Image 1: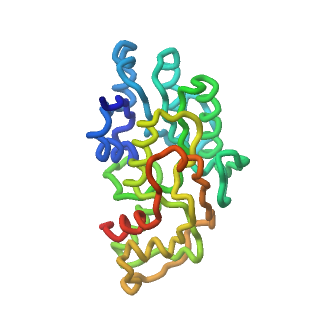
Image 2 (image 1 turned 180 degrees about the vertical axis):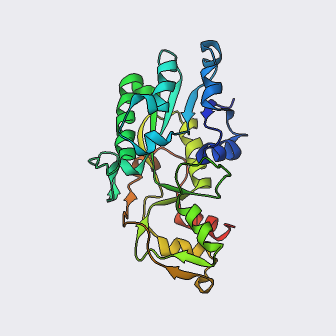
Length: 264
């Protein structure tokens, strides 16, 4: 029997692809926050997991306030039930460092990162072993249509400048990238194995942005005109050894490359 999961956030990039890629492997109820709030305990108790993929602009940009924390609002509704909660945290809790394990000192550099740490701590205190916290690296995939999208990511910028026959010049910056297909495969495996605790969800190695752009452009730089940098160097990669010990497959750079070569 498939695990049953409530997924919150119909306009979320990750939520969209979890639903799309895993709909035949998991019994997924995809809801808005407002729809979720209408569910009673009898309905909620039929599910194994809840995962929130939505976020508010105030949580993203401002100092922490519980009124802006969607995850804690959800948890306050389900904390007396037996449902396990999956929290989508971020690699940004570590700051810009390399080969960081889950035990590394947290060095948040933004309100967003600080807020994620506060929410992580509250979740662990409220739910203990009924929580699964994913510190996610950079996940790439085809953007979904969402006019209210809060932030622009790497792929949004890639498409914007590609359409103008330009590309962003990133020098020797590197990050830890996962394709959305890799991410959803990892997500399913963690649910299937009923994991709890904190995990880095990542490729586990450097991917230079110039390398990634080369794959996405089908190994043909000539169609692009370099333009000036518009980001700071926050190069990083995460140590994913804890995750690899728990899942059934290897997370390969070659699979990321294949995904990028087929990107359009």
